Image (cartoon, rainbow, N blue to C red):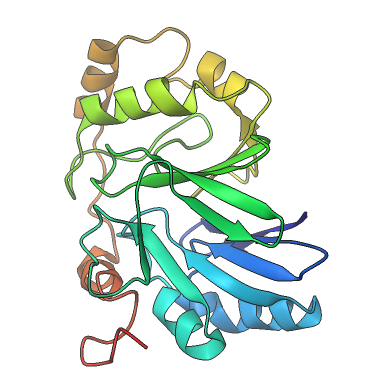
Length: 238
């Protein structure tokens, strides 16, 4: 499988490109509107056909490119059925759903807690998991706004993500320290918030004590992302 990891430097957002090397069918996970031309150029250079653009959740720190990519390429879009974008995405994803591209597929895990509509995408060979903001490298997404719930997030990570094989590569939605990848086993052992045998009560206390700034782009990003990143007056179904 062809795989590329792409960074938006302003928001430290990772976008992931996966493709079947035989059929040339491709998927983009968590694309960023400011990086559309970069991503389209890469697809063209690699002779790939984008069939899916997926988000892990409704982002608060950047505007998604889902709607723009659909308009430019004819791809289908997908996001959690619990994300509140029913009039926007082509496919509303639920636990156990499968997104196929060529002979490969991504399986959907519902991993709420950072938001109600968080999902993680697991490669069908269980070698990779794309965790969005549910599980970051040595961290996790905040739980103090946008339906956040520390107890729900703890149970999502421990019950689903930490249940994956130790060697499964963890590809998060962000990293602010230049790290690109971890593994389930590493995070289960070393994640200071969720790993190392931390109890649910300890995690709740940790998250309650964080003093986090208001997300800079939230007032623009949230309403835009409920429309798949398109202007409110633009048509959202094609």
